[in-house]
Image 1 (cartoon, rainbow, N blue to C red):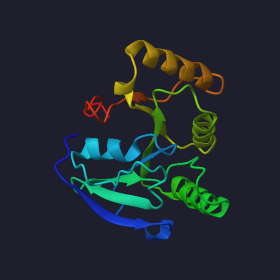
Image 2: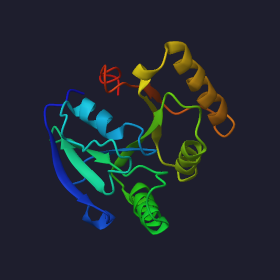
Image 3: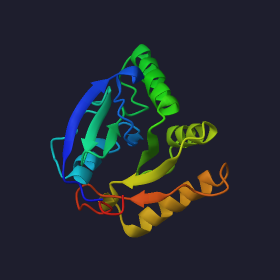
Image 4: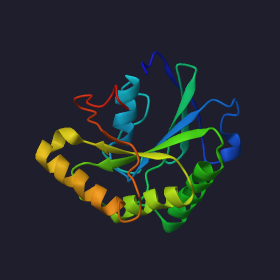
Length: 187
């Protein structure tokens, strides 16, 4: 899909305030500092669409962007960010879970995984939760420009091994780099 237009629509923490026009939604989520905002900006060709920061945990709301006036890209807060209060974390988890489990127009969840790291417990738990809830998701490895292809293959194999402990088959898997734009077309 070629992105011709990408515009911010709304930010909120209440699912009832999300768009009601019935257009499909594709949500992006991952551990804090996984490169989600950079990936969204790379995919849309707009460096300023999603706010990037050197400080993890910048996204704190459900952010809807309309793409080509045909579908929504939904930027969700990162999970696992420790430098916020437990109360804030609990609030985020509650509205993210509500969004993911109640949006009828949610077509797919893109779970972002830092390609440089071995399988993280929090990522595996989140993907298993998606499976338990029957939510469609894809695995998206980010930052592949920061490691060798053999290290990437090793980490992907580790994820596959971990996932196949709980799953009969893997969900779709994508590899991306916001720097080189690798994966832009495929994703």
